[in-house]
Length: 344
Image (cartoon, rainbow, N blue to C red; front, top):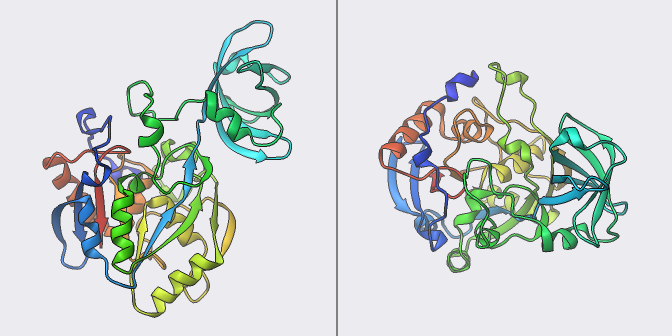
């Protein structure tokens, strides 16, 4: 398949600037891969498609306040530092993006307040830098007080205080993402409890979503596209829960493309889940045979994005593109704060 196979017009009016309240009242379009039928529901109805013994896999990554604004030593020039990933916790070394990059050179120090500053120790890309923070211990704690929630670039408004809660899943636990696993934003504690009471096993993985999730694919031949590497972890317990469901002919519901990528990265030769941790750059696009994912919960994605490619690989390209046309006709809301899709 080619990049242009995933090109479609997405008017700005379809891009949600704010989430629905409460979260689980977002709309849900349900695609049945076998019958090729489409239903229109509310997200809280997702529990009706689950049976006792099924598994729901969620991504427990937590979005941290990755956008910092500081001043360069001596000149006091205003510099934005966008934190990408922690490289060394003990030495407080991070990969970041700086803006304006032309003003930031190796050896410069950037001050954020009287307690927190960083020194540039290397260049990585035109805007990329490696920095060392002065804050011993947990840098996440220091930036939580002064950073801004990193809303996606397509949400054209300023960050508001309520975004701190809205742009975070209710089950987020482990700091490390600069973008939310947005399919999970629709779950409430009440809905999760209802799912548990029905006898569905909820189990976590971690995949720290990076800024690469917004990076456009720039090659027509998809085999030549290289994904950014992202850290993931699948525990022994999660693998055992998934594999027990598989052998019992139960279904594995996967929340989001990030969770799907983590699970499809770590597979045994027999097609079962295996415990694993490390970095993945797995790129999934049609045609692809999923080994772990039985049902996929996802959001509506941007044209020509790697996210839309993964979802279409799961649903089947033609049926998937038909569903997007239907969703736009029915005025579904797109992207991070938008509505949801269940592909079963």
